[in-house]
Length: 479
Ligand code: MG
Image (spheres, rainbow, N blue to C red):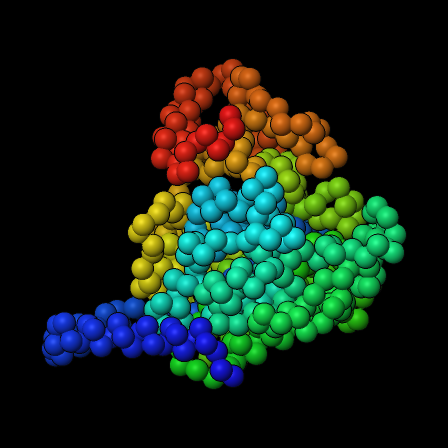
């Protein structure tokens, strides 16, 4: 099919190549240098499977007693479990923006509806000035596909195909949006969901192909689309970003998974995602691509606890979605790359979804954007089982508010706010700050501030350095 963007891109590449040849002349040494650079970087494929509102405790390999995830458990036994891996925000849009740009959400502005960019009906979305992982990898020859939930703007200029992805198939925002006026009010539409209550579109490229999207088959169809992309013949490396709409409410699953899980409906939904992961890894094996593909499985934020039985579990972590307690931002994360990532290891190294950008750049030979501040660390040494993580801290933001900071095992809370319906509802300053030792006390129960004033001083120094280098200026932080 004719694609004007692709044509434009090819023309730009052609002009760039010609101008290089004209200015320098065709020299054999250049060709050899290029060839040897290519030889040095084998350019692995990348698959990122990003769940929506899946909790830290929702997989059997992360300790859930009644959700069965044999495929993810196998992925864990063949790959690496990350026990301290974080999203960059406790809610959907900023978390997605951060993963794709390697930057804290406040740097792109994709973190608050106060700036009218969070919700799809605001007319806003990901700014053109941001560089996504897809754009970065496409520049070094990758095929790219986005399948699933986008939620970085639904108008044409914000869609995935305008931000580095060759193709898009999915529901462009949360599956609980566009509720029809006739749907039951309040939580009834969520707790007794029907497809027709939520008039969400299913899109291919920039076209709506189904509305309302039949959500009962959405996890299955995302999987089929992902596998079609993986198995499409081509000698280019690829980047697949598969962002499941589930297990965000309203919960739906295919016929084959109905009433299968001991955990009920929520378990059915997670078990279908588990099946999906199995299908994708199986397709990679069948295609002979397993040993050249790095697969990352994680979630955008913690479980939506106020959805009761329709929400997941953060296991022993405190709280869930919407909060900067550990349950809101620490995610059940697996990385799989046979023969490269050591099999069956669990790492307690710190990692963030923002680190995927620098990691993929390092592994592919792509160039990171140099004209902006990134918050991305190259995790390659950990993946290869060679060294400790380069990351030693985590900033916990809620919109523009710096709520807490982790440095090593210590976490300092400067402000608190509960998720919807939990205490405290209002943003509250912690004066004095609260201090928890996350290795001794992963559930954040025992405030150690009075015993460790030295730690508070050390972390405050990190905060001061961080705020000093923020652009835009920290006035946005509203401290
Ligand atoms: Mg979410």
